[in-house]
Image (cartoon, rainbow, N blue to C red):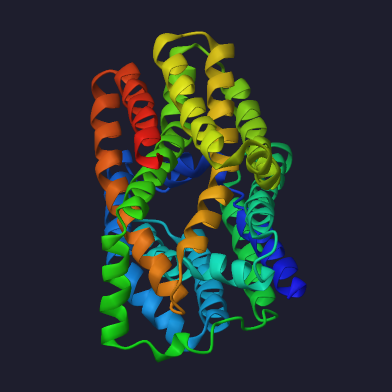
Length: 372
């Protein structure tokens, strides 16, 4: 089953190579899409993702994880071709809707393949490697963008499509690892799986906490950080360099199992909630460029170490053979929390940027109570 792991790592690397990522917003603006239209597309995409989560989980358990992975990887490639050729609102909306189908299909399937391929051994390390290889691909793409592509947006879109095509081809080499009883999911099994999730109060609280931490990281390191850097007077060239450094820091997920193994579960929760809280507080109180960059990098490293840890804990709690369905239910719950969290972050940042950082710090501290 090591072959599965190596293939999944390679897929993560190629799918991480989004060559237009450093200028994703500018790419769309250059095609005549306004910022408001971008937010509308993102909202529609997230709504579609939530609706498709559970149906895709049940389908994956029926048709197999390998088949689902191959189909979604090929559709991922198609979405990048659509993005490359998109020139108006409908084109970019179509790309995001296809992406919603892909992400809802992959949700739980990629981690299930990795977890089951590990056979219960060193799975957290494997999750860290998987995430780290994705970030390695992003770093590679970011460096090539800065050195070669620069403002050639069509070339960035084309190279991204080529990279995703390579990932789609690799997916055909995966060996099936689905539990033999997973395909026998019926209505009773599905209702029982949903009921077990909703009755597990500790699981629900941990999912809410994981969503809070993930969205705090995502919102600040992708969107609000640029506003903070402008607030601190950083130049565009410096911001570009920081982007590459932050992407490189995202490769630290390979250290996750070692860190949590030494610290234990309780102290790990304290670390993963405390670091974001402190980072958000620093961002709210400072207009110093150095401390702002340090806080954003700390937030990135904390989340990179946290994601393999929380994925491992989620997989450990699953007792049913219908693993993809259970993980899809978990993902839907987290996405619902993310919708509300994003709205609050957006509303607060429009009024006063530091208030959004204070909110991020507050919910990070609240996560400690949810994890306890």
